Length: 99
Image (cartoon, rainbow, N blue to C red; front, side):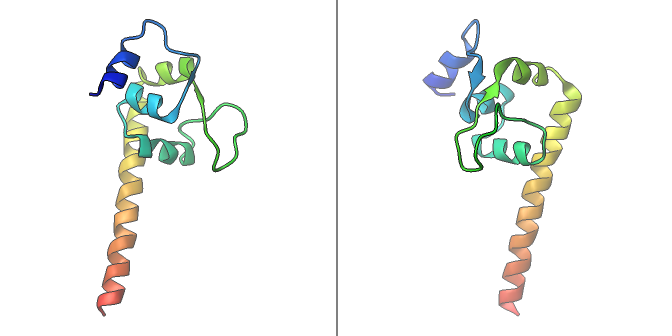
């Protein structure tokens, strides 16, 4: 845990909007997992940001989700499924090249 993360997690009241990195710290996911959760519709950014734009999320919603065991299980499964699918596609591509 780096100093920034430690400082952020020790705040008595988090900011109203959280960035992708801050959400990753709160939920104990990797920052690159957050777009996967957005794509799976398990997280919803504030407003209507463009696809390649910076996304912010409501801290109240994120803190509620962090206490919801069922949501955490769905999010964890979505991450596992994403990486399994990505690895399977990579293996199939390597197998096609080897043939």
